[in-house]
Length: 478
Image (cartoon, helix red, strand yellow):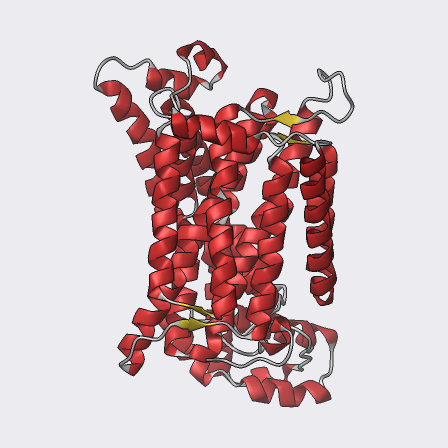
């Protein structure tokens, strides 16, 4: 068990390297011989801006490639450290590998976009064979593959070195808060901007369909169970099994919803229409092909895409805390944001865009969270000979509490079966406050709680309609 007596971000050592299978063996070997300390010693006697800039670039490139991220210190060096031809060759090798990693964004970025469009077209065609919610659940699985990969690596290394356990929670909570605090509002802003010309109201509202109540109410069981996990201060394999069972129950509810009517096929993209109009066995084969091609492209591209973006972040001197809690989740969630914004831009598909992200949130609170104690415990068993549950310290409990309150507020906001400008603005402003000022976490948590209480009172006195439970019960009885 890791004991904490200070905020989470203060316990993250900026000089600590993250476990990183992305770093090449050659680069790591060269790094053992690179004279970091000599560069820094000679920094104080530097002469000439040209040599200083070169050394700063070299140090940051090396640190980016090995993920020794620069945060608060500046490294100034002179040209004296480049007197040896061998050192010059090593530095050029580092610059070449770091630059190559960053440059791979030129092909991985469009590949990620292509994979997002393929799986989105597959989901739009699949909603005429199965329920839209089930199609979005499949879509969420494919889109969150990079997120699962990142979390698995961090949880595995945390099992080897329990002092790194806070990184697993930082990645999980950052991913959830980013998707809800930034993703949901951006869906609305894209929808409002795209519908400005045709909408009679200046700030239109995204009105959800009855079948979407399954996703909204589906957030409740994992949130309630996580409250119990926080109370007992540990996260074990039994909890993982319960969360996985909750996710299977959620899929069962989605399965009970009917497919969409073929009459709305004309509103789908040409690729989705082509796939659905295939005769006989070719129809499901074409739809599965879209999912499979998009998923395969995502699988092949996700690794180098994350590597290239992390290299760029390292070159820019991003701190470890920001990297783990915000940069890595943002990059791993990028495919789902692409498809969601694509649907939000087509005004009539904005509800589907929002449910895409809600489905991903459910995936995060159940399957992604369940992976942490399983991978952590197995890693501890392999490295230390005994299975160990994941224990929460005070800082991790506060992180999870903030994330629970944010998700609870989002669930209550959608319980009206609509999402308006005020809802989007509140979620975005509160997320932005905690992002810019991490020290305000306690205050933001209180604001989340107060706003949740206001909504509950509004539902109780009848000032606001509480439609989601009613529509959810209709789905269960169907």
